[in-house]
Amino acid sequence: MGVVGGLLPSPLHFLALAQVGLGRWRRAVFILCGPPLLVDGALLLVTFFFYDFILQRIAHDPQGIAHNVSYAGGAVTILFGIYSLIQSRRKKREELARSVELTYGGVSVAMLAEVAAPGTWVYWLTIAGPILAEGRARGYGHVVPFFAAGLFCYYGAALASVWVMAWGTGLHREFKSRLFMIANVLLVLWGIFYILRAYFAH
Image (cartoon, rainbow, N blue to C red; front, side, top):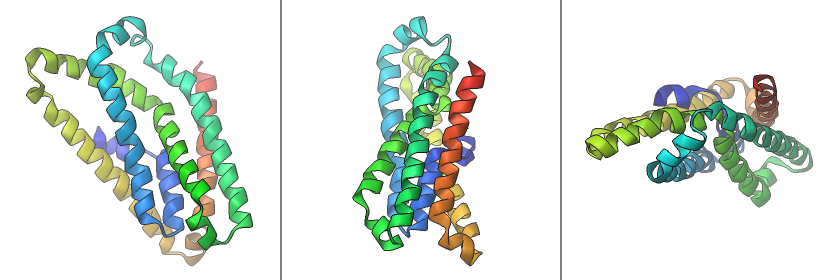
């Protein structure tokens, strides 16, 4: 499950890829790993302490939650992608790499993208929640390997996929020089996909 989640394209992948295009690998790794850790950590605590309440109230329709947050996530993702593309026309590559606004904006969008991802809610409400409940009954040592392996495989696969995309574009000079633009165009398209998926799934 972790490998599949890490390999599936997401706004986090495209945001990280845009940073790779600016030569900022450390920032790319932070965007790819930091927001999911914070969001999943928060959802872990919420699920751990309030899963019974959540189960009674909303766990019967996790897709409904995903549907509602997808609109906001899609809209912000589109706006940030467009903003980045506009800035790339106004600033040189070195100025973009030093841009504090793009850095904070990218991290904020990455955080929202993780929250808005339907898979995040489905995972915690239908898979991780019952496993935590099992751990409460049978001992948490029984379920730790599941979460540890999931984290290791997810982040390993996500980092590997971004590296492969960056390596592939690096084989062609024209692609490499336009990697920042390509990543942000993909970000806009993914935001549109979020909104369309939420609309047609309603």
